[in-house]
Length: 162
Image (cartoon, rainbow, N blue to C red; front, side, top):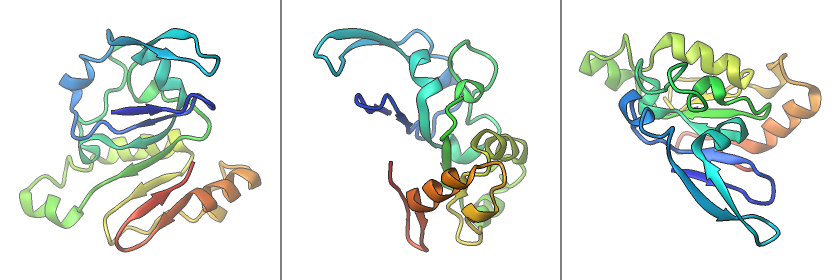
């Protein structure tokens, strides 16, 4: 599911537990939406990816949960917005108990998500320390301040404000 904010063009992407097979089906999707001027305009999935500002990491950031590099216009590498934030729902203890800890979450994907978000990567595991905006040196001071206001992490939930 994706939400496009018509006034800003920003997009939130919630792919649920989609894995690569699902991502591969999205490239040809298109529909018509009403723009801010009341005119209909066509939108393809590939039009959304550069404008994603919030990505709920798919399939708990498993090795095959986020497409990268296979389909033009769809996938992690196409998420190029400078304000990109990613939240990954993960429970490392459960993953280990199930024997999935080598691939869920997948360390190379977490590293790439951290790069793409310039440190604005939040893992929901209770033992994870959320990023401290003041220490995210890849962000400018105004970006650090914005991130500090946008993301609030508690033991029960993560709040994100656009």
